Image (cartoon, rainbow, N blue to C red; front, side):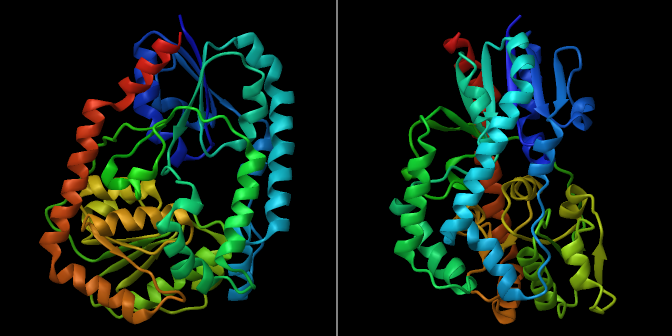
Length: 403
């Protein structure tokens, strides 16, 4: 029986995209040990797949929440400092290295006893690198997000800087400085390019032509509920873990609150959002929820307003609902570009947010609703087609060849 070690981020958005792959590995007779979060164990065959929690230090690191900021400029500076502040970038790298050493020390003996023949690891989990260096077997990357081009070769990143980062960041920073910081950071990573599997298709990957050949798009497939009667707007920014995102959500709701349609807002019972929304009285047709059943919300709503997180976007694509995308980071901007390019929604570009742009973009989708529905359906069709052609079988085939 083949032994496969799978190292994921301990979030639902980084577990459920892989669930069909995990089930396939079990069906092939592989024994899979997954480090993620044990609460997901009921969703996979327990006979062949065991889920383990990470050490508490890693859990705490992954659950890091930024400081609550009452001031918008401070919130924006804290949020974008990971790209624009060399000191913060260095501290973040130091913290990653500390966590990588911690994981290798805490899990090294257990992993050696398990003796994996294949390692699959999350592209967004840098704390796994030291442990993986100690495991002499083939390793492949799993990407639950988008593939990033080299930023200095990306016209999309330059637009992101001009439209999002520069108008949002209150400090003194220019485009060349950003690129210099990213190049320096990239040199320190010094990563060997592994084969990476992403739950994407060319329509959902901005600048697809700039992605290395080692990045494999395998498509995606899911069953989404559909409702014959759709009404209103569903707004969320997913898990808001910092103040800048909370301000963006607050401004988005304010911009659309004048629409007569029902508006449902998901806050995720988040502290930052609560601090803002509890001071504001909205009209009766604006419903603020601590949590929502997102798939059902998407099924019942006419327009989805999102930050562009790819997990929610894929759910919206399969629910056949057009989108307004209001991103903050570059991967979400990439998704927004892809959505807009394929006429499945509109990317909101101006910062600070302009109420008129958001409202007019929403009304544009409503005026041409059938056209946008066609765009979303076309993206769903391509994702399905790629999954049928490649899908989880492509990962299994690469594992078999490596062995």
